[in-house]
Amino acid sequence: MENPTRRYRKISFLVALVIVVLLLLFVSRIMPPSNFPTYSIVTVASGRGLYDLAQELEKDRVIKSTFLFRAAAILLGGERRMMAGDYYMSQPQNVFVVAWRVFYGKHDIETVKVTVPEGFTKVKISKLFDTKFSSFDHNKFLALAPEGYLFPDTYFIPITATASSTIKIMNDNFNKQIAAILPEIEAADKTLEEIITMASLIEGEAKSQVDRVMISDVLWKRLEIGMPLQVDVEKKTYEFQGLPDNPINNPGLDSIRAAIHPTTTPYLYYLTGDDGNMHYSRTFDEHVANKRKYIK
Image (cartoon, rainbow, N blue to C red):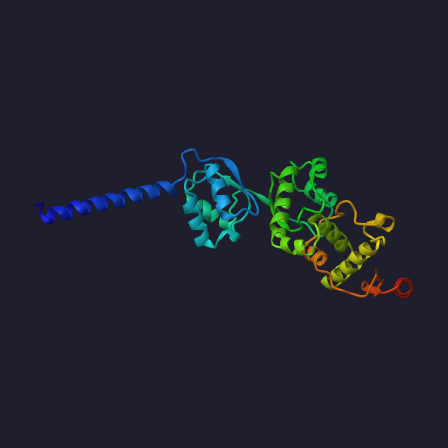
């Protein structure tokens, strides 16, 4: 019969060996891959879920363990705090450092702060970018950018930005911002294209949210009865019925929500007075009277 003390030592040795192996395995998974993309730029796309982001980083040879990256990200604050953008990998870094950098947006690359206001057209956006980025192609941007789907926001864009990369950044942000309200659009029995086009008209017409939702009601009613929209920001709507074929600018969330949720009103006409306020009327005669009263 085996001596109990000897058996205990054998079991202890095996346990210790297992622990050492597991620790070595854990450490090896923490360390960067041997083919880490040193001196390259790795892009973290906007709107990516934590699982997809981890898979992408593993594919790009930035991390070995998707599990450890997700665990570190969750401990830091979760996937919603992950910062999209370009990250310069000057040297191999372990999975926890990578997670920390993405969480805090430590890009290690010079960026330019650019604010794109609500209602800017792609022409205005392109002119804004053209003055800030040496690699930016104005004509390519105009040819490729989808009007209406470039989300107005404040961006920190790498100085190496191109037409294609800025379009991707803004369009990815649009998709991220719009995702939460897609069910509302579906419930409104409208297509995304209809909502964004209407939102672009509202964006150009109203400055306050109260006016946005009221103008939304007026314009949707005009469409229903076959009346020209007669919107100042798009002169051709004076002549033709229906929505424009495409958005006329890039609206913000307030105008998009107004297009989805108009406030029911008795009005069919509105105008902006010299006093800067919106004035509404039920009939054309009331509208003419408002013109005489508020526009000199």
